[in-house]
Length: 358
Image (cartoon, rainbow, N blue to C red; front, top):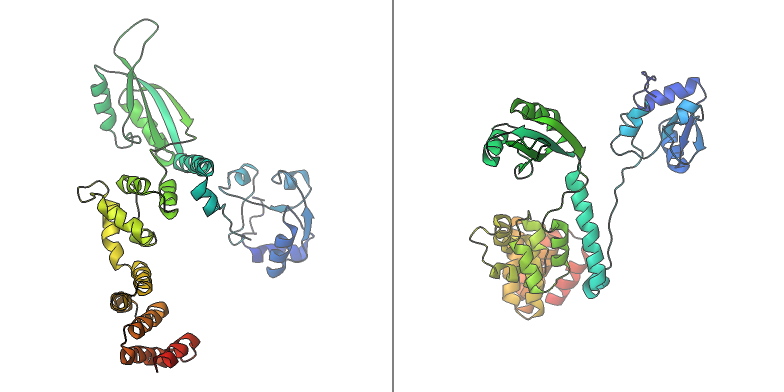
């Protein structure tokens, strides 16, 4: 409770619990009981409860509560606050899919896309507000120019300006609407007033949909969908890193390179593709494929490239030894293995490779 000013940490709670009998209401008695015990507040009585726990201290059911919180708004509304070190467990929601079903059943993929669309759109809209206002002006362009003259009236891409029909039929009135973040909302309202806006209405934004969710685009790539879908991903203006590109199947990376990205279609994707051939994960997978196809010298070159940036990389070291052995370069392989075993004498796989080399 807010009026427990002296209780800011779990240690403070333990001190208070030592002097009076306290009860905590929670839906998670085992987790909470363990947390209190570790904090030295094992004397607190844990009371199981369901429903809205925020009212428990007010009605006298418990002295304080332990519950899930995200923004803390409901706690503040009920004159409650979290302890500074009172996090019992940090959790997040994870969407898990069946790869085979996603690859083979279009209805499953479509349902997944719909979920991802709504999840991303809702996250994108979090903390965003739609502002509607009326304004006099000579033209839509003139009104837009006044809007753009203010620092906090940009909207997502710009304001929507439309002619407004008044009851008296008077011309020169325009309706504008734009999106503003919560931290700039009041400044935006003040700026609308400053340029002649009136009748300002504000409403929370629930969803903001873009052309295609970035997560869905990456899902398609991870599922190794047909090349057209993959190239469509590459053409989109999305953010992607070399780490992510390097994790895609090799043939998909090659397909991505076939798309003309050098003309600014997607600079982030182009940069990631350019960096992928030097990425350790990419090199390791290409080396393993080369080794399976009998291209031992090429595999050895890729493994050496990985080791040049990560000299203690076990998979690259043992892969290089295998490649050298396959290429008939046993002495080199033994040198690589001796150097590795000097650092890791207990590596059984390296010992077996050395015996094979002899």
